Length: 459
Image (cartoon, rainbow, N blue to C red):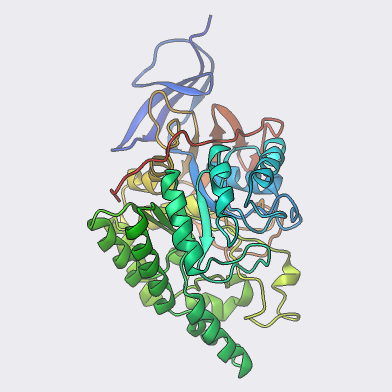
């Protein structure tokens, strides 16, 4: 009788502290051995010679809009896209679906939808909005991974931004629940004032859009949230931070002992304001792509370890909402469609800037798992889920409509060539993507519920 279900031989395995050419054994979806020359028998063997084996990407920030707006993306196409990008777990944000995930009923409705459609594992954010603080306890008890709020307009009428009283009261409640509050940190006062001024005067260019959402708006919101968190003891996670000044404010608060983590997104690292000028609304997001000097600063902060993780903020829409014949830049939908490319982007940066692959693994898997207490995920270690992806450095990958698995193909990443390719993705020991094709579509992902929020001040 075979000892294992699968032995993967000769892979360059990206471990938490190094890369090692070794064998790996899997049984019942779990990594059970990482050794040189495993001699026991298995039902199947695969030779990974020449490939780098990373832990599966954990993308903590996607918008799949299901239920209610599945025509924008949906759990089926969205999860397939994640798998094609080497991902094995995603966290879906609470807005854009109908209803928004702001009470227990909506959460459980979304769970049912995701369990029936997703091909990889998933967690779900709950929302903090005006009027729902009494709902937070139920959301936490029923498995929300954490809570998300906007300090500027969300773009969704059903998911209002928080006012200051809702924010501080919500923080106090979230702290009592031992959960994390994720924040879109831009000052509504600044962005709304500047946007109205630009639109009223017909100033609608890419330069005008950048000027309407300045770094100062991000920094003000970050500082305000940090002050409220200091009073309430609420753990914070800042999403899609785009500027050095905001990162430095967060780093200083961490040094003072506050429980804070921070992400940036692959598009802020690979692209800049020139892409918005060249490509228009498909490159529109909030905060906006910054100028090239700010992009360079962000990359340096990533290398120096001041950024905890990198996500996609995959935020798709039908093209009609970005169509330049129907919308000027301010009225077009703001969101980057690119959830398939985060790991490839980080590997490209690693090659360019000589970043160790184990640091890439921490940014896209290890740190998210530790921050959100996903005890069985995030690292290639004995006892962890067999969530892995094989990466080839011998092949390049050029994004096309054919190989981009999102529902809508208009993307900032279209025609970009990466110096690497995803060859295989395995979720809990089951291959879900291989050689450019989705496989085992009947295999469904599992809902990942946190056991206890990890309280940590380390970066």
